[in-house]
Length: 351
Image (cartoon, helix red, strand yellow):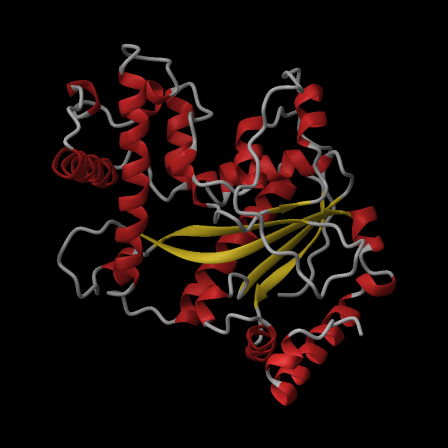
């Protein structure tokens, strides 16, 4: 995809949600979260939409109830939980309100959280299975993903978010081969960034607004890949203070810290998030599935989102941070490994 430059309006008045931003930038797993950052049915609807569901669609409502029933069966049969009736019937969106402590009895909150975590895993598992039973090539899925990201960024610019540059798409085969040859683990499943998108915003202050908006419009914060988030640019304690939240409150930490990219320059800074992006399958393609079981209308595609402000982007192109220097160091490692084997893997790529 070519770089996109477009005029923009003034930044919309918005208050970013600190909890959503923390979950994305610290790279933790949804299964370990103690709470959900939502308090209304509208929040639940927005969350379902970014996960690929339309809350008012009867078929989607039925699908969500099916996921709830399957989660309940698993929890009762495998773990012998005695689930309260309110989390098993009625509007499934109430689970979010129970989990947030907005609705229901005190003891219902923990069961609602358990149910939602289990639903999340089952949905992801079945969506992955669905993808295996559809006549979709990798390039077709990549095209769906690129269209979704491009449309989202276009709409955000129209809404006033100060995104001054946007680029990305499917990496070339040569680039993927080089990356795999440079990595200790050469298994193709370890490459998360076959699809990579880069957003440059006008100022550092725009970064929290854009990160938060992306979690509401493009990729759900519950499907960011644990251990793959990198945040060099947003100070979460300063952001908490700016939003009127206790800056000394405990912030989540990276339990699975992503490995440092040894080929990057020492002063290279970026926000990097790997997300499993939900994609709604068109009905005509869904009708061609080879599996009769109800697995829903959503599949997933991994992609990497990079965000940076304009000044940092310029600094990232200076000296050893320059992308050409990065590629040269990476290629040098590949040649050393191909020619010297284990000895080449331990060679400093900056030598």
